[in-house]
Amino acid sequence: MQSLTYWFMQKLGLQQSLQQKLSPQQIQFIKLLQIPTIELEDRIQEEIAENPALEQVKDDNYDFENSETESEADFSYSENNSPEDYDDENNEYDNETYEQDEANDNMHIDDEYLQAEESYKTQDNNYNTDDEEKNFPIAAGTTFVEFLEMQLGFLKLSDKEQIIGKHIIGTLDNDGYLRRELKAISGDLTLTYYIEVTEKEIEAVLKKIQQFDPPGVAARNLQECLLIQLKRKKYEEVHTDEEKRIIDWAIEIIENNFEEFTKKHYDKIEKRLGLSDEELKSVLKLITKLNPKPGNSSSDSEGASSQQIIPDFIITNNNGKLDITLNARNAPQLRISPSFADMLDTYQKSKRQDKGIKETIAFVKQKLDAAKWFIDAIKQRQQTLLKTMQAIAEHQYDFFLEGDETKLKPMILKDIAEKIGMDISTVSRVVSNKYVQTEFGVYPLKHFFSEGIITNEGEEASSREVKAKLKELVDNEDKRNPLSDEKLEKILKEAGYHIARRTVAKYREQLGIPVARLRKNI
Image (cartoon, rainbow, N blue to C red; front, side, top):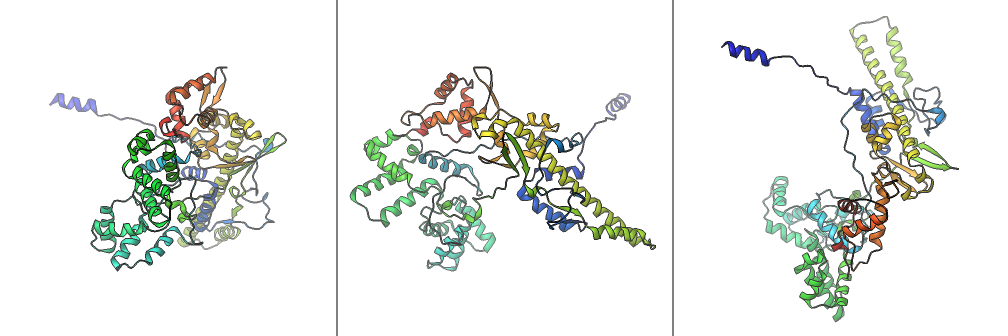
């Protein structure tokens, strides 16, 4: 018993640990710092709606110098008016993983089918793309869903079939594919409309929708999408005997040799179908004219495929001096409501100081403090944004002068954080979803961050420079005998860029370039 008591005494004890937690104000500032310009206005309107002590001045003659905000319509950075350093010592939080958002280069049209097939397997119903869209005429002011429902209305369907049809149309993704299983759709209809529907009934309605315009809509995968278009082309158009043979070969390839087609094993296809090189070229030309993403035929596409970009910064070259201006929307004209401030003064001078008056004074003070904090937070956001953009512009000075991608220097978040004396995570939030307008176009701030690679001369080159060289090699390669990653690695090393084959593969994938086998053309 004594030994057991001694064991417990040995195990029990006090431990001190130092934990740092963010205050609600710090959390709010982090959120303000991260949101882009396009969302800031909504955030300000939300704050104004919740706090009667805060108001936005819309008078063009408003005196900013004597206002609470001391802001300007265009808040610019200059050495004579350096923003105050933001005290980040009490604002340590977990570093976010910074991911490079690389813009995909336009690829050969053959590869669009391979990418669409891959995206069908991996993406969810909210899949979005910036790839080139093929246009199909849709009535102005009509959304993609409305266009399909209009065609559904022309069919003689029962009430039950109409419900099934509308549900299928509503389930299509932005590419026009039906990615949901029929069994799951059956369950949806039971839960939503309280009707029992078999998979066979859903399949029957689906087949009718698949005959709608644009051709290929409501397909369940890329193979079915292409087959729908080819069969419609065969039976709905007039063709010469030669054209009919080409269509039949195309249907045979997509229906029974799809794997070989996606992997570009053209020699196997020629052997199986007994085709010559010229005949296969004609078939492939027909297939590549088909639309692998019929949902994107609509210029509207429910508005999902487009996103408005408002630059947060504007950089202009003034005879070699870079002038950085913050978008006017980032410098709102905010102030404390004079009437609300007068209200506090009136209550404080009131001779009546009962419980109700005291509670009112406390409420008014709380709203005034919140308004003052929000105004200061917006000012601090402006200063932090400009300070970060100034550091980026200084680091990438040569690029902003000429717009030459090869002059982008290696730069990571840590470089900017050390230069402005802030935490890496703060810089990450400033960079996130922010854009800068230059004389050469609009760029996301993440565009200017890249790794460094040592060249033969011992100089540091940007990974973006290496990617540009890699893309140039692929663009100029012999498409009948494309360069493998190993050959690309060798050529890059000869050019002075010492990178491993796995790095070549990584950069190639980031550029959206398929492997050599899939780049091969006959």
